[in-house]
Length: 345
Length: 263
Ligand SMILES: [Cu+2]
Image (cartoon, rainbow over all chains, first blue to last red; front, side, top):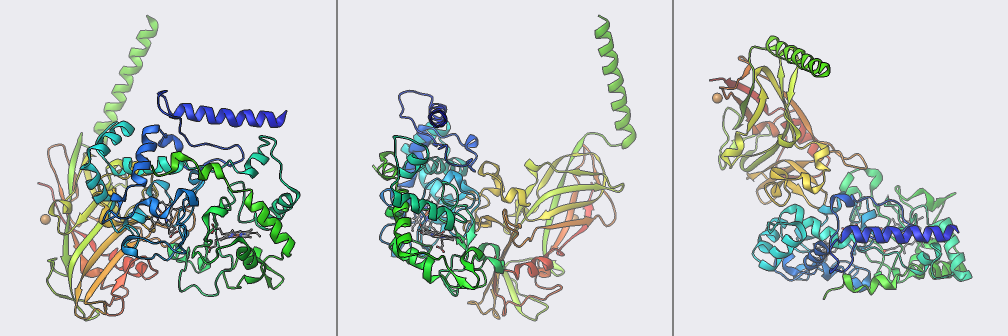
């Protein structure tokens, strides 16, 4: 009975949102899916209601290299749909003029639930994220002001802005909100695990996967919390013994206790988003688990959950590692990765 | 019918009380405008880009940029009562090389005699974390405010000055980009400075038929010369770093009201 209720609630949520977002019937449904197994979103969806035209405009912008200085790099160059919106094959990002950044690109997923953005949380307002890559000299090396000037000269864009926001005039607000509408819709919540917890389609987990789930709950959920598999906090998980290369959260707060801390990333879609960690140092989940069991380095800011009676890391047998990996693979959301609505046309 | 009479009586009374109160408070009625004149200076002379000045640290500097945000302006009377300029019109960006920006006009100030003003040098923390639809005009990070916004560590630059110096160890240039609003989720450096200035002689007489001009001197050299003398040889570039608080502590003293024009 209860499971049926939850399912109905979930459906209702979906239907309501879809219908609220899209009033005219000739346009396909689009909206920010709010899965019942997720917490409340952080983004104020009411202040930027998603429409089909807004979504399409955001998508055009996301895949348009006009957003970079020499029209060579688009957001989609570093956030590839089939790689869970990361930059496949690069440990650190690869931007304009073949310049390398210092960080691995983050998966763009479930962004309406994000509190702070980027590995160091430097941006705390989702609508302002685009300023960072666009104005970064090694990413797109452009200014948002100039992007708006360039867009204003293209009549197709003027029409798209009019359709989405009622005015041909392109402003900081409409430009950023269009990009937000596109990215906010990238909700991944249809993995095997999601269907299992929502009791949909009679999906069950194997005993190995269930054991992995219990292990992740016990040993990882301090940081990789809730069904978002992140609590959005900044932690040092013991990757480095010194931080000259990247001080992480410290750059933003200048507080010694934040030295070497990075935002806890989600554990969803790991099969597609390799390599892992802020510097892309690991390419396999085995490497990640070996890090947690035997590679954790003690420094002043190492998270206390990774320090027990003088020993660092999380004790894991080989069998346990295999079960955790089996479980992590149930978080792969193939339907999200293959969703044509998000892919470049 | 009785009801209507009653209502009328109440309205009459209210009008009476209201008008009485107004006229007894101050002889001036209505609202007026005031212009805030930010007269940027270097010591006792007008600030001129390209001119060489000597700092307390004995270094020769010349400026190429001198911009700052002024916000949250308050007009204060002798009895301590005050008028707070509403949030939707209290943000100004002063740019030394843009003449109009150095004399913003404030409207709708209730008439009266004000003896002091207060303002924030910078942008208050609520605005620094505000949604994009509230970032218009001088606060538009892709518009008038584009030179005064950090995109990687989202926030406004409160004061930005750049220039050249033979003593600088950074290709003969210096750059001070000072910001920091205290952070949203964790406390970070806070360089928001609230500044109160007393009108030296005449009060600021706001009337419907007058437009007083508060002529402030803003001594750019105070950024270098203060509690800690700043050296362009040792610190040619300061942005989001702990030392920025030392610079902000110096420059908060650069403002004074030299005189008020009431005619
Ligand atoms: Cu004067």
